[in-house]
Amino acid sequence: MSEITKLSELAVYLKYAVATYSQHDYEQLHQELRARYEQQIMEAFMDHHPGWSVVEGNTACMMYLYRNWVFAKKEEEENAAQLVDLADDLIENYEDCEEEFLTAETVVKTMCIADQIYDFSQRILKDQHLFIFMFQAKHEKEDSFCRCMTTSDSSVAADIYMLVSHKDLEATPQSMLLHELGHYVNIALTGNPEIPPEDFALVTSLIGVNYDNCDVTEFFAHCFAMSLLNEPELLNVNPFKTVPLNHKQMFRTYFQYKIQNL
Image (cartoon, rainbow, N blue to C red; front, top):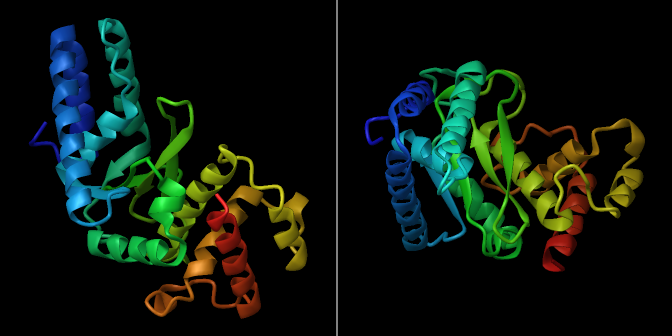
């Protein structure tokens, strides 16, 4: 897979694998992906952020497959069916493009702010490893998203997909990344990305937002982003300039309390 750098190329490869691979070939592919995964974990450790990795190009394609394919040790048909589904999803929902929306350096700087303010890696990620995928591609429905998965201990984790924006023209790359981190905070607090903490209703009432008439999980993620976008390094990429400062300070207080008490 070393020559694959685009999602369209990955889709072609997966179709080829399904047409030609035996169970032994699937096993060898999984071993190759596992070795690259372990390499990424070690590199993240050496870069002093052992909880997360920013991946692009060939590494992103390989880790995409590793994270989304549940290898079946004895079921060739099951492996083939999964790869077909992944290939179809890539073909139907993603389109390669040459635009550069976000750089790895920017992602690292933004993640370091979340670590500095909230100790994000230690308190939110804990023993899980977060992959932040950077694909030069557009998604049919989303500019960025969290893709959830169930871990071996039955807890819920997620990876973040940062794509070329074409839906929300007001958001900045940094605000979008922080928004997705907000969804991860939601998962850490409740175990379910669709269920916000019960006490978040107090926050919405204090700022006059109708809890029943808004998409609460999306607003929760927005509030997490706003709690960090007033940091000096992010002020010039803050799209929430009309939100009162005292509201943003309240969001900071709320998230500090929730994260420190995890």
